[in-house]
Image 1 (cartoon, rainbow, N blue to C red):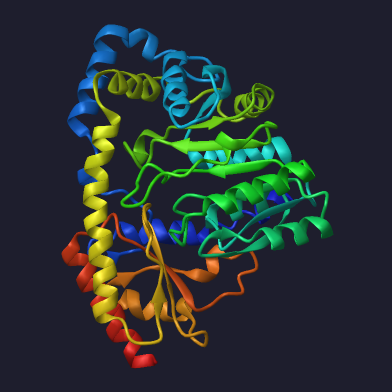
Image 2 (image 1 turned 60 degrees about the vertical axis):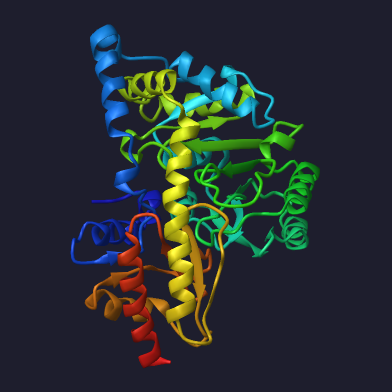
Length: 391
């Protein structure tokens, strides 16, 4: 058989292995980005689903508009208006999770040989999606305040035809860092000068444990360059498979055409269930309960790292989100260490998989949302013992 060049670029082995590890009951997994199952509003969603089936069952089982349920888009518009974004329901497209949003951006913007700019490091599955469009991905350097504007400017000076900038400014995956407001403004200003479209991915922004919310790039976007992507996966349930794109009406039309070639529409039942849930429940109150739980788990992980990990290691202190980033001495290889860690009952994601050039060996990502506090301490104890043996 002869396969397309595109499928040759779709190396998702790491993602499959990651999900397999999270399913093993004997492994303490810090590998995935899974929400805590106890955070899911099961009863409230069941009641919403029952209501949909009882009152609108035949409609819920039918096709629905490609752009998404109008009442759900109206609710999303009101939420984002309260966050300083000038938008209406017509600026939204309902998608089947953020991963589809990445793919739609590829369909809308990218041709073989194009260049995508991203943070260094960045979300590994985004790298896979962009490479599947036979593109090159060029990393832009970052620090504790986010993307470094001077490096972005230099990369664009050298590559003025770059097609897309992909960023996660708030509680970034994998580092957990948050861009400062000056960095957000500087990056947006550079993109506007070069006419560079931005895909702003924000699956974690609602999960804030300390500090004040910062303006999104989309809220400061006066030229229609920014597409904002959100998701219900981390605040309600990933199994619902619903997210959204927020962009200019011109761009939303393009994304909608791309979606219609992909799946026609996102699940009518899922949309109507979430819509009914939002009608009868306080999503912000639910998110407050989640953040209280995750804040405790983050604090326990930070405390255990401080108590247990050997000298020569460091880590980020995320103000929100689901991850923190650990850096070991630069001669260590976290991918080589992983098999021994797994054999002892603990898993993480090696840092190299988050770098466009896969040239970083000494970092790793830890998730704190899906493990209990006791599991966090035990897992980090195992990791620390292993590290001390090899350091």
